Length: 332
Image 1 (tube, rainbow, N blue to C red):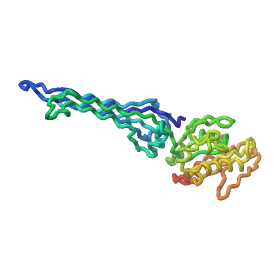
Image 2: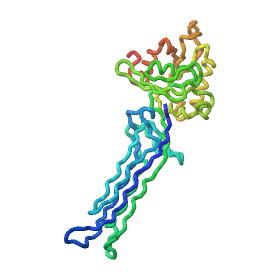
Image 3: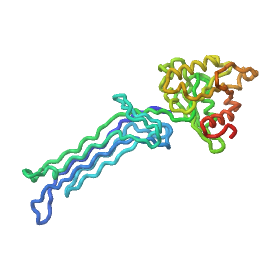
Image 4: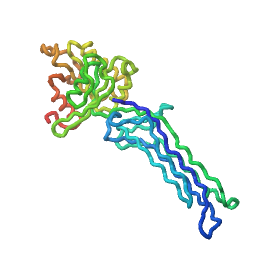
């Protein structure tokens, strides 16, 4: 999934004013009647709730609004250039690429920002007529439309964000509970970009789950896949923290949980206080298969156990998540 794109934007140029004189029968010396040029089109960016990622449409590398038309005789003003609108997913940050500052956070569906205003049309010669110059033969060119390069950076808006140490089973879980198709493999960092999946339960209950690339020690400082992907959990309502409880895990559950929690706390931005559901994964593998429960004790938290492969505990987990999101009860 693309979570950043750079687009060059250009507003429309204003149309040129017209030099014209009134020519009618029996009026041999008509005055100036050159009309003004039309204003150039604006560039607008709007958050479209039919989009969830930049992959939902072909994102242009450049986008230009229409130029204004030139003025005409008989005092006719040129036509205004058509605006151009770029549709982006809600949660998109619009950043000035050259200066690096945030222009607008389109965090609500339907929110929009006027990024560039079209150039003004030039005045026709009628605007320059006065007592000492009744036949002006000059007009203004239209003002050029400004341009700007913007970086569109997506912060996913999801109900549930999957976090955990690399290879904790996040992609496998997402693939089994939704129609998403993230890459699944038995080595770390198979998820290199975030993925979204929609979970649907009986009773018309549905919620969005975001699979975030694995976090490692120092992620809040950019280590591994770093803060680029930590930002995607900022807008999730609930964190589902997956911990590999199998014998094949490269860290024991206690250590893996603690290290990821430390990264979330160090990153800040409210993640340290976000509601968290903790789950031990891979319950189909030893030591689970030998009826041995791995040690993971977290104060004031119930640690659940699932297997995305066999389906153990999945239904109960999804219903519990829906209940915590206020979408239904655990008994639904």
